[in-house]
Amino acid sequence: MTDKGIGLNELAELGPHGQQSCLAHAQILQRLGDKWTILVVGALVAGPVRFNALLRAIHGISHRMLTLTLRGLQRSGVVSRRTYPTTPPKVEYELTPLGHSLVEPLRHIVVWAQHNEQRITAARAIFDHHDGANG
Image (cartoon, rainbow, N blue to C red; front, top):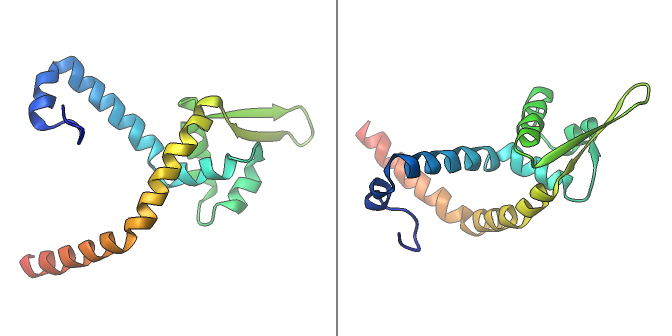
């Protein structure tokens, strides 16, 4: 394996168990790399937040998508949900210690995206132009 990641030869050498492990990692990264996950984690950095406050803070997210994202993050151990016995019930979400450990890596990804946004936009335009000519 190189410092650039796992190549095809290395992936083949992992065998079925190692490849299954890579697939499991890919599923984790798929959950954590989702745009809504990044925004939800960012909204929870400062502490517990109620559902409707999250809904207002995250522009463009639907009620259903926020619910699905929070449930996925709860299932992964990144977010905890606390219900208070009030009328109406008060529910807060907050990052778990595992969730807090995710903040810095996500921050690096966001900085990388900001730093490379123009290059990616230019590459997409070139690709789209050539792909349209070939299509």
